Image 1 (cartoon, rainbow, N blue to C red):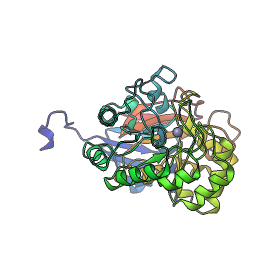
Image 2: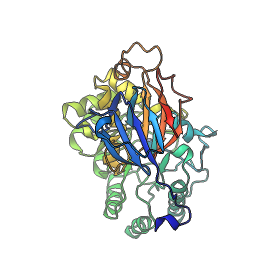
Image 3: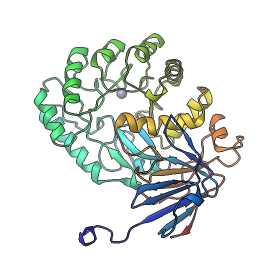
Length: 399
Ligand SMILES: [Zn+2]
C-alpha cells in the first residue's frame, strides 16, 4: 500500500474552496463556469459545482473565497531561467518566487541561454539541457513548476542527438535562432528531427535580442515550422506589420505574444488572430529575465493590456495565459476541470479600481490584486506582495 511508502503522506488531503464569486475556467470555449465551489483531493480537482451539489465533507482545508475570483494559475510561456532562483541577466535572486506573487504557477524555458559560459559544442549543450531539466524538475520556488532543459540548436547536431535528448527526458528546444543555426533549411531539418522524438520547438522571431544574435524574418520562421512562433511581437524588435500578418495567415503554429516585445505588434497579432477566428493560437510569455529586467507582474500586465487595448473580453485574455498555453504546451495545468491540478490564482479587483468587477477592472486596463495562490492543493501565498492589494481576499476557515 502507498501508506507504507516512505515520503508519501498517510493522510489524504481534501481542499474545499467555497463562496467563489466568479470562476474562470481557462478554457476558451467556456471561459466562465457557473459554479461557486471547488474540491480537490491530494492536489487534484475532484469536483467543481454549486456548493449544495458538491460533497464537501471530510475537508482538511476549507477556504472561504469571500466572493472573489478563482482562475487557473497563470503560465508564462517564455522565460530564460539559468540555475536555482537566480538570474545573472540582472543579477537578481528570488525572481521565480516573485513571479508566483504575480499569479504565475508554471513557466516554460525558451532556453537557458543566459548561463555564463554556456557550452555551444554538441556534447556540452546536450549535457546542460539534461542538467537543467533535472534540476528544475526537482526545484520549485514557491511551488512554481519550471519546465526547463531547452537546448539551443547548433550546427553539427545530427538526428541521433535529438533521439538522445528525448530519451534523457528533454521535451523542448530553446529558441531556434539563438545558436549558430539561423538558416531555414537547417532549422527545418532539426525541428523535424526534434518533433519526430516528441520534442517541441520555439523559434525566435524578429530582430536580434542582444549583440551577437540576428534577425529571424518571416521566411526563416515559415521554413523552420517550429511549434511556437516565439515572441511574434519581437523580443524586443518586431518584424514589419505585413510579415506578422503573413505569419498569422500562412502558419498554423502558436502565436506567442510577450511582455518584453513590441506592444503595437502584440495588438496587431491579436487583431489578426481574431479576424482569422484563431484566438486559440494566442499564448502569453514575458521573455524574461532579459535586458529589460524581470517582470513578476508581466503576465498580468499582458492580460490587462490585451483586454483593455485589444478589445478582447478579460475572461478570454486570461485563457491566453492558461488553457491555450496548456493545450499547446501539453501541460495538465491551466484549466479548472476534474482531474486537473488544484493550482489556482485567487484574484479580485484592486482596491480603488474604477471597474465595478474584477473583469471590468481588467477591461479598463487595471491589474487585479491577488489574494491567495494555491499550487497542487497547497496554499503557496496569501496576499501577494507584488500586485496592488485585492479589494477582498480569501480566508482560511479550517486548516
Ligand atoms: Zn528571442
